[in-house]
Structures are given as C-alpha cells and as structure tokens.
Amino acid sequence: MKVLVVGGGGREHALVWKLKQSPRVKRIFCAPGNAGIARDASCVKISAEDIPALLAFALEKEIDLTVVGPEAPLTAGIVDQFQAAGLKIFGPSRAAAEIEGSKVVAKEIMAKYGIPTAAYAVFTDPGEASAYIKKIGAPCVVKADGLAAGKGVIVAMDEQTALDGVRRIMEDRAYGDAGNRLVVEECLVGEEVSILAFTDGVNVIPMISSQDHKRAYDGDQGPNTGGMGAYAPAPVYTPEVHRQTMEQILIPMVRALREEGRLYRGVLYAGLMVTSQGPRVLEFNARFGDPEAQPVLTLLETDLVEIIDAVLENRLDRIQIKWREESSVCVVLASGGYPGSYEKGKAITGLDNLPEGVVVFHAGTAEMDGATVTAGGRVLGVTATGRDISAALETAYRAVKNICFDGMHYRRDVGKRALDRCR
Image 1 (cartoon, one colour):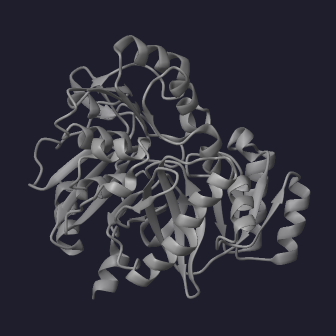
Image 2 (cartoon, one colour; image 1 turned 90 degrees about the vertical axis):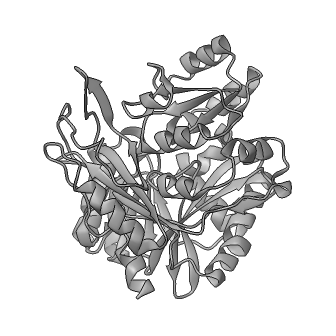
C-alpha cells in the first residue's frame, strides 16, 4: 500500500519510521517532511495545512492511507474532506478535534460530563480576566483558547506573571486568533503524565505511558516549549492511576464526545496531573504527542497499520497491542534561542556516529549544499531504548555528545523524575 504522512516534525519522522516497518507498506510519502524523513520516505513540498493540495496529491497518487501528524490540519477538517473524497485517513473529524482546537470546548465537555479537571473561568475581555486574577491570586494557569504550538500556556506562580500572560495573549496577540478567548485555571499540584490512546469511537486502548518536559531549561525552568524531551513508561503512572484514568477520564471522554455528536476515531491524548486526589486533566490533544510519540512508538511491537485499520473499521476490541518491556528516552536538541527567535541553516555534525540502540528523529532539519542543517526550533530528537530508564538515558546522552551544531541546547535532566522514583 501507499501511505501519505502529513507533517514535517519529529513526531512525523517517528510515524514514518514505524509505518515503514509494516510489510504491507510499499511506499511512503511525507508532506512536507524534512531532511531525516527524506531518507525513509519521498518528501513532497506541500504544507501540512494546505488541505486542497494534499487532497489533490492523494487522489493523483492513489494513496491508500493518510496519517495526519499535526493538530492544525485536523482542526481545519482534513479528515472530513479526505473522507468525502472516498479516501482512507487516520485522525479525528473536525468536530472531534475541536477538543484540542478550543480549550473552552474541552473544558465545557469535561464540566458537563463530570470528567475531573481543574476549576476554570473563560474570558473574552482582557480587563475582566485581569480583574479575576487579582481576585483569586496566584498560583494560577493562563491559557490561550486556540492552537498555539504548545506555547500558549503560562503557569504563573505570582500575580504579575499571570497578568503579563493575559496581556501577551489577548492584547499583544502573541498567538493571533488563538487569543480571542482565554481560560484561567486553578494550578494543580502533582506530577504530569501523558496518556495516548487509540480509539474507534467506542473502544479505548491506551498506549504505554510517557512524560513530557515542557519547560526550556533544566529543573523545569524557563518558558514553555513544544517539548524538550520525553520518556516512556512513566513510573508515576501506577496501576491504580491507570484504573482511575480509564474509568474516570478516557472512557467517559470518548463516550461524551460520541453523545455530543463528535464521534472520535484516532489517537486521543490526555495530558494529566497526578494529584493527591487522583489524575486530573490538564488538556486533551487530538493526535500523537510530540515528543511523546518518539519514545512511545519505539516501544510499540504491533504493526501500526494493523492498529489503524482496526480503528477505522470499528474493531479495536478485537486486536491485541503489544509493547516492548523496555524503557525509551527522547532528548530534544534545540536551536539557540528556542522557544524564542533563532537562526536557521546551522550545519549539523555527528549524525553518522551513534551508539547501537539509538534512533535520531529529525524535527527541524533541511538539506543545504549536501549537508544537513537546522531549519526549526526543535531540531533533533535523540531517542534510545534500554532495559530500564537508567540504561536508556545513558545511551541517549552518550549519543547527544556526538552531535553538534552552533547554538545547540538541550535539557540535561530528562527522566530525572523517573530515576528518583526508581531509587
């Protein structure tokens, strides 16, 4: 079969890498792809958000299956348009993907169906939002309603930071129309965990747990990013937390979406805070996480195409999904200045001298004059597996030392919480 992967980041490289392992897949296209993906697939110069061009390409090439990586085309309705043209595509519909496209919609559904999450208030006026923050005080969390590439969330430990967040989102329009509405939430205390699950709209099968590292610098300091690293599985996700997550969050949310006329097929991502009262939802996303997909997919043993078919054919309850009994770690190498402004075109060295058990997923790279160069904020995801978290981390950071580009920075404490719990 011929497969089209939509997107050009580290998550999409991991998807291409995993799909390529299926004996059913004969050729993979990726739009737009990147320098690393180009070694595993045929890259097509079409933006992930140019749905008409993607649709025309899929029809012309007689693509058998399209897998959508990023949230923007999902929330714009790529699945609806491909299905209307008779094409097979993996991902939620526009209505279902709105749980990521609008934090307000997600919050309202959770409130209506009693799904545990932080208390919140919604604002369309910056003055009213600021007055509310002054009333409740800090800590609190300020969120842009719409898509902001993982950067539209401000965890404010003091009142001024929260007020600055309101101004940045609603007045400075740092994230454009995503800031038309704003959510102010209570600040939950605990440890975060990401649970990705396959669902056909009725059945829910969770993937192995993972933990992202959102802040730019060690010790969870600095601004939020799209993610500076991840590992799987996460020790904080105990059997009891798993039971609560399934019974109180994942199954009820899939049921709620169905009852709301938003039948959800694809990958449902629940970002959770494990509190002393149990897991609480921080956010829902409508696709694989990035960088969580990198360690999670490296531990997946089952053919991803077989899982996708089971989702699309409403028979997820009749498939068994197997995982490697190991740990996996992804360390993100970022451009200097990220998540702020950064330069591109920096030559990358050391990609051909890596330890065994390491896969480097390209996120923001390009080819220039025969060399691989930086082309994004998050450049590479150095991903390693090992018998346990300690072994995986040792291998990943040994590989990181071999790679270099001007301005490169990365977190040196990926997986620290897991190590602390294991000790």
